[in-house]
Length: 190
Image (tube, rainbow, N blue to C red):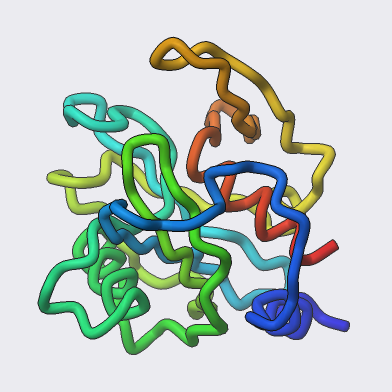
């Protein structure tokens, strides 16, 4: 079975998985957000990630999926993820073949995040919007989906011990919400 078929099956809402992280549960009182997991359609597909500018007040310098808050004008979470990817990377929404939406992720900062999975043509001329994105890069899908590359760690945050995932790819550190969303999708694929 190819990677695209596996993702279609994994995103079937009827599937149930064992939730390992309490942040995947419920979304009452959280602000809606959506991210795009953009997978390049090539023999060895990759995932597009962004590096946030270091001068931002929130999540400065972190690696993230393109995405952000769901606006009142957005038809749904998919529309929000596509709009945000267009704003951040000039990724045309018409170039995204949406496969589905992965499990909602509740962030420690109060967001209910819908990860939208889509396939994009390889080698699109993406341009980072310097107001929102310092840089963008592509990580091989096989690397991200290999559980051996994701390390579960713990740290004290706001007076509590918290678990998080950490993925090191070259000189890029993928952790927190982004790594958690990846880990959740990997569990679905298993």
